[in-house]
Image (cartoon, rainbow, N blue to C red; front, side, top):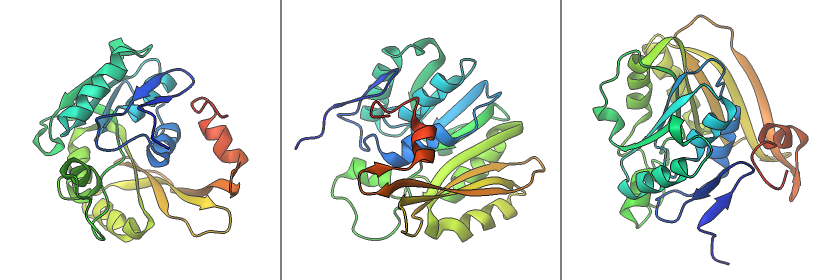
Length: 236
């Protein structure tokens, strides 16, 4: 069955036909999980079709969100999705490389579902390769760049594979950043976690850790996952 070009959420629709990466569980989880409280300026790195930026705008009526991506087709779709959402006046999409940005202490929240498949078979499509692999944006450049762009008390939220756990901790230590939250993501109850959700800040904090399971059994969604994503997915 062909994938629909438009993904329907409760309060907005997302056209994701041309963008390299489509709407997926990782992005929706991050958009629902990240702490948007008090965040007036938000940067979504690798915005794609703009789903995380849209979720942040829905969750925080005071947030202005800038979504950036190197994929011009993705930015075109994000701009369309932003303009046709209820929050178009607070959303902007730009085709720009994160590594070329020159913002200093400009954002309360930097959020990213970054490219992280560094091994295995490379996708044949170049746009998909750029979106999925850490050739254009490394964890190091994301973390060091975000540190410069975050205001005092600001936060970086991202999703990574569990295999990147040690690397992220080392990068935070090297950059004098603190990890305030880590959430393990388990696809089906009883399985090993595959993803980690991170909240990173320069402020002093106490680390909070927890776990979220998506399905208790195939097709049976976990109650915590339903609560987290209830305001977005039509099926909930």
